[in-house]
Length: 33
Image (cartoon, rainbow, N blue to C red; front, side):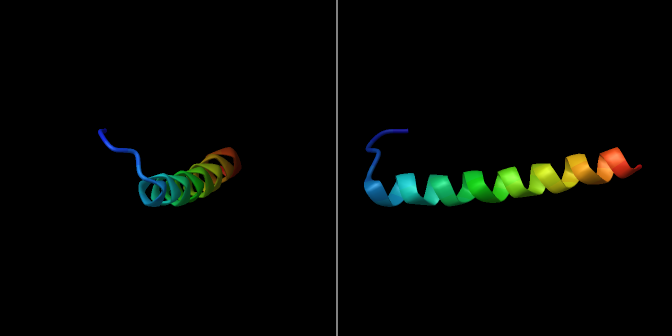
């Protein structure tokens, strides 16, 4: 990853937040089952 521009870092933050949300839901469903 060369050239970490602010735009890329913002995009990475959004992706990280989405992944965190998905993982949280997955863990919740796994816990229910």
